[in-house]
Amino acid sequence: MASAHAGPGSTYSGTVREPLILCLDTSDGGAVGLLCGEDPLGTERSGDARRHTETLTPMIESVLHGAGITPRDLTAIAVGTGPAPFTGLRVGLVTAMTMGRALGIGVHGVCSLDALGYAALVSAGPDAEVLALTDARRREVYWAHYRPAALADGPAPFDVHTLGGPGVDTPAEVASRFPDPIAEGAVVGRGAALYPDAFAAHAVPDALAAVVDPIVLGRITTARLGSGGDLTTAPRYLRRPDIHAAPGRKRAS
Image 1 (spheres, rainbow, N blue to C red):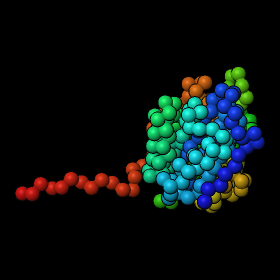
Image 2 (spheres, rainbow, N blue to C red):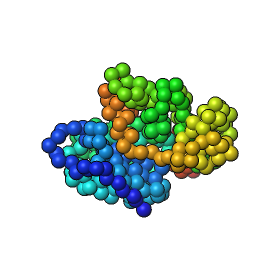
Image 3 (cartoon, rainbow, N blue to C red):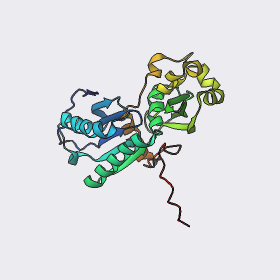
Image 4 (cartoon, helix red, strand yellow):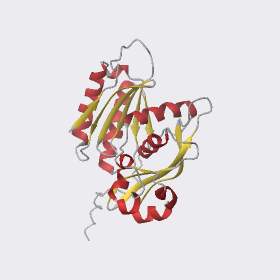
């Protein structure tokens, strides 16, 4: 079931031409947000990780309707590029690319783990670090290691600097590679909550429950459009899908 939230003053008047970014992520369930300049106009989330096709479009329609706008008002789309399993991630990327092409607007990709790292570091000091972890199934986690990245003429951090990853490994392998942030409780994401013996001894419970905020994808997109940062829409599958094409038929002798 989807859950929705609209921020204060969430109706878009159409008279102020702030950048209006539709934000989508399907790396863990589905999430939709709408960002106008610095102001979120609404968000909606579904925790169902198996019904992206059925839930994503209705959530987009609901968020746009709640803000009182039409798709033609949009100026850009931000989409999470994973890492995530093949099928769910593909739904979000195809939806974003199809809408962008139909509307004639730019589609910008952001690593979904970047959003987790950004949210954890937005109020942290310049030397802070965080390890972002999500569920990769197969008893593995997706991971990335971050520190803040300051903007010369604005608040810090405006973005995150990637120290390592994204990658996919067993919890034991990740824990052995990053003992310091784990010992300091500097971990975020539900991947850590799934393996408490490896990651959660010193972590804050709220950080372990964190999921990708689609609005953060929009904030990172805005920052990178100004700085020339990476906004590629290439999916980060990190491993081959579970289902492979059957080999061609053997020629009869």
